[in-house]
Amino acid sequence: MGAEPIITGITRGGTSWTPQFVTALNEEKCIGCGRCFKVCPRDVLTIVQRAIDDVDLDDDDDDDDDDSDNSFMTLSNPLDCIGCEACSRVCPKACFTHEALPLAA
Image (cartoon, rainbow, N blue to C red; front, side, top):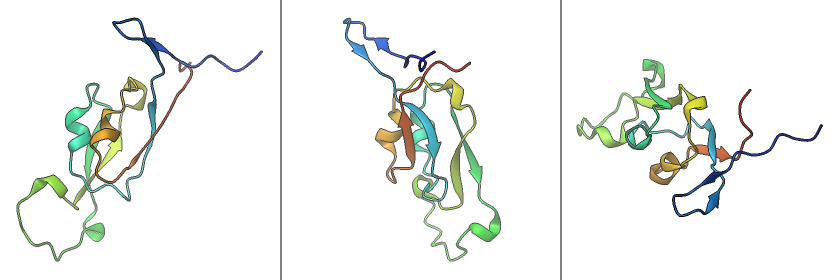
């Protein structure tokens, strides 16, 4: 038997496209800004607080939650990903890896 076929979709206009599903998230590069969390339509991501040992305590207390170093995103429900790549388009640190995949068993 050959390899399983890759998942493809069809747009409303009838054009075929291949979803690129999130397969990895580099938590070390992630700044915890939450942009990806806000745009994900399927709750694939969860924000996690870093351990106190991992946080730089010389924070400038600027109250800007957009680029927080005290948290990071993690893949909590990767099988719910629809392959839209919205997370990668808004990620300022290019933390995501995507690829075309066969249907999960």
